[in-house]
Length: 115
Image 1 (cartoon, one colour):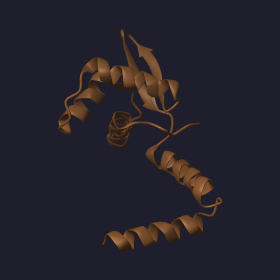
Image 2 (cartoon, one colour):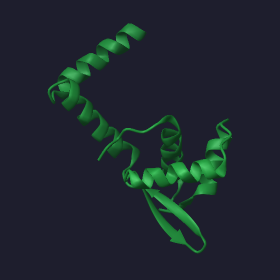
Image 3 (cartoon, one colour):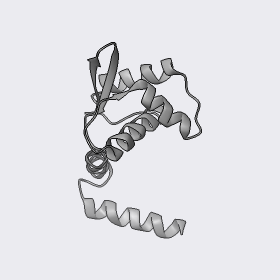
Image 4 (cartoon, one colour):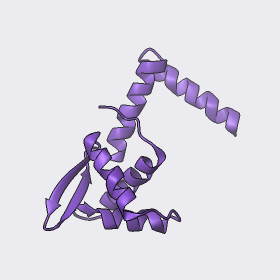
């Protein structure tokens, strides 16, 4: 699975994860709900733009799509934590010879420089 995606894709994934995490029951999320969540965060996006990007996330196997009535609804394929774990493992493989400890030391060093 590839995890390369752009900033709007990140906004959409975060909106879906936020709605899933804040919902007591597992629910399907519509494009309109995602659009409202994104626009409430100060970004103004068009419905068609969000729908197109959500469909691309389906193609990338990051969201699942299901038609319910006349509209499409979406769910994340992986939770935020699962995707973060996969991304961390990929980072460790690519740059640290699969050594998580080396990655952690690099992160600690980076954090101490920025403080």
